[in-house]
Image (tube, rainbow, N blue to C red; front, side, top):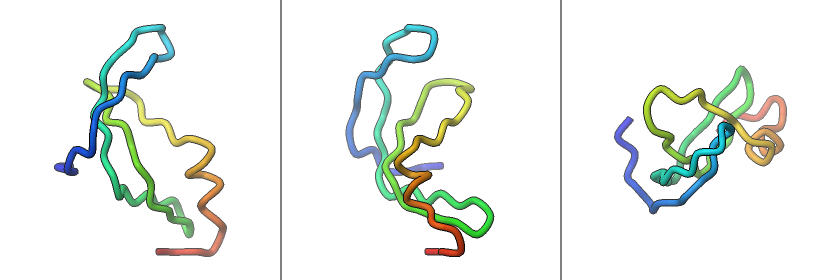
Length: 65
């Protein structure tokens, strides 16, 4: 998606591996009539995306950016 890299962070995956991920800023997430802008970690390979609790809480119904 060609987001500019804002930094790197080491994370522990669900299977216990420690990997270094790129961090990106200003990612706009939209779902139905909800939207938010947040930071994201770029996981390697074909990793399943995961949306955390804080971005979900920041997406009030009926609000579009």
